[in-house]
Image 1 (cartoon, helix red, strand yellow):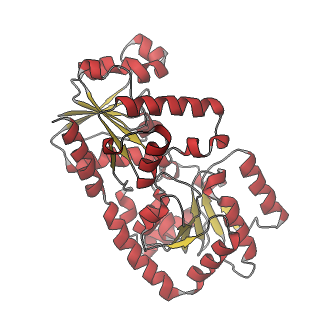
Image 2 (cartoon, one colour):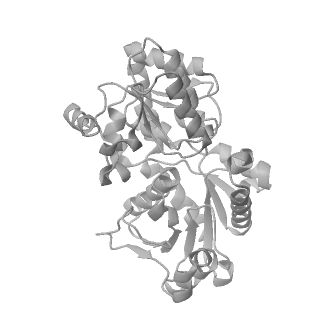
Length: 384
């Protein structure tokens, strides 16, 4: 079977959705190598390599108009290349599908990660909300099947877009297999030295935007006046919210307690930008703190559990779907509750050991094998 992917995020997105898309592509190839996989993207970069994979093929626009107007190519022009490569089923990894697939008898599956722009439209540019909504509605209406990454997102599709429940399959994401591989103390110490990290630190991972809750973690650090463990932040953000956090840090002299790793010169290297060193950075942490108000899945929660970390996360949205009984849940809007949880994991080794054991077991439920099996089941169903 020739399976095609809309692969813009595979090659151009370094964060959440890019990681999710790469995980899907990798897991399908690793577990079902008898198929041919074709990645269609407006630009091929070094974020994902197909070297040595005879059954994987990367395609950029191969005609003048497609190269000149890449947005048009993704929304319509790519169909010409799908036909040329005899694609049987096309998977829209970026929550969209091109026009005209059905007329070419190409089956289609669309991945919908979240409808956060519908729940929190004020956090987006109005034009972006309109664009995301239009693309998602079209894809949901025309796709042969829809895949969501949580029950939360499935319910949102039903509530916001009135999508029939029977058209939607929930397939939980996995994370990079490297997070499941335990690094030695020496390897972890080497990475900590490479990035000039302290011997103990809490870890926050995610874009610096309001719903991710970094401001509440900073408030919690301020409340933990006698706790000497600093916070290391992996994430970017240039916006009013990031500016308000910077002002809070200055006001309360927290510069030594909150370390923005992306801003350090040590982090300006390929292994950091491509997330290669992230598993060891995770495994060197005291705990992962992820008090997001709303997510489609919450990939850092899984990465933290797979890494053998105690995880503190929100008691809402889809986080309980991912964390099960293996994490500490807090009200993401209550800095004191976050501070209390951080204090517990930094002082109670028995609690930490229990969370680590449960977390590793919970993470096994989200392996790449499980992910690939569920995706392939959907592919087989639409291609009957």
